[in-house]
Length: 249
Image (cartoon, rainbow, N blue to C red; front, side, top):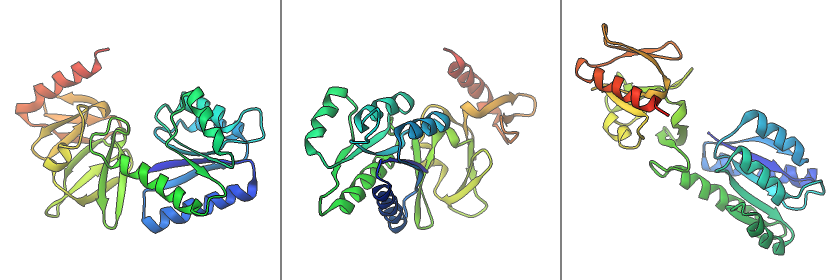
């Protein structure tokens, strides 16, 4: 799920943003959610510091009538979330020039009085969502999968292992405390993953970052959450070697 954060000092406008964004997400069935809507930049920074989101979306008013403006807030956000998608919302078009001075690299600018204000918000969200769907995107490190009528965004770090489903042409993706099942094949999924993943068995792809140990006597992979899966005899040593390589600084 893609997290979204809002900061606007006017409560009425903040609620307007929240409704527009929520309705846009609902209509398009995007795997996004507003995590916080704040009127004060310090409140947003406390939330971001605590939750430590990655590649989140931030809609920021530039004139926050506070100790920092939206551009300075974006600079602080980048310290917590370096690859954040930042969208500035402002009544002052000329303020856009100042973002180059601070090098915050925003995704876009939205003018509050613009007649297509809602369309601009939708276009920014769609732009973010399309970036998340690019396979092996180094900016996002996520797997985009279609489940029923919704496209899910799954960060690589949340995936423990993947196996075939009991149903034909479907697979089961195991997270820490959740199992997702959808139409695909191990071959197709494997082509979209990065080097942290290893196909240790003809029916299993594992995330090496979540492996606690490999039992060479029983040829079993044990995960940090207590789950386990088989490893083929032929690939057991290769998996151990890969774990050793990944553990090196």
